[in-house]
Image 1 (cartoon, rainbow, N blue to C red):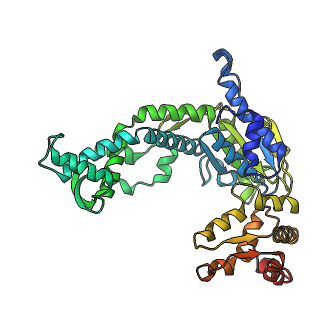
Image 2 (spheres, one colour):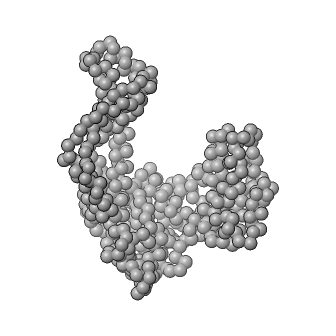
Image 3 (cartoon, rainbow, N blue to C red):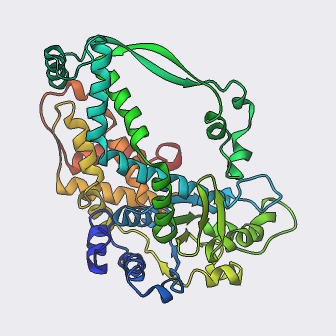
Length: 434
């Protein structure tokens, strides 16, 4: 996936996100430039820094989805954080360095999962041998007739429901739980993992079905076969060169700090974010991680503050700014039907599990889009998220009675009006539909 051209990246994003072409082009170029950087001469590679992006637009227009889909395309470690959750050093709140610790943890998990898939077949073979030892404790010769017969039965699933006793290793750590994980994690220390290597391990017998025992033993073999040093090194390489951090609600920490109230740490949060964004080394439980080449995508509505209200140093680290458009009725129609994960397709798939075929006519789609647009205009504008509440209200009765409905159900404009117009006529919309 990482060799996609900018045009191909945009085409992939189009499968899930409607409109916002400028923002898609910006992130596509940022992703392609990372691929290009890996192929330049080493003497200049470290001098090429990512061009961080700020996406500006109201809620529900696709800012988070663009960043999330981009990370999935790049098969890159990705973490989403809210700037408002962090506070200046000295105040109660999360330390900004925990962003990178979370990113590294996710990177390790991603690489570990890939490695697990790679060695899954070998781990299953070893697990089968161990399980045969439990089933035939006296038959140690691998070539005995009984062992081969049982192996075939095991592979064919004929022994799945038989009960077997397996040895389960446990680490006794009675005092570890008294520690507060929050502060320890912020220091990049995992006491539980530290003590697990020195505390005595004990084994106990546990009864389980053969099918469950095979899965359990296969996971044990996976953990034994995986080289965690190799996994950690690959994860660090990916985080440092391909990691993506999405900082939402950046506008909430923009603006001048006031002398009282919750705004006291706004500028402090920006100054704490600055070293992470411009490049520093963060200590994690997996070792030091450099942030110089991590791509940061900031986002916010910026309807009260402006990007220019950020401190100049932080502004300079987000050179690319793209404004996303508010969604129109036509956009809602496309969002309902075109993306691979379109809401209409989701509801059809859900109800199909009950044997119910759900059909939406074109005029019904138009009516749903019109209602969502109307509610957004007359209450809080939450963008495409409004479609979730409208559809949930529309299909509430059908979903409740799905098991009793035998015939296909067609949703047309008349049905939509009958269900939703009474709510639309209420004086206070917010009391009836969120």
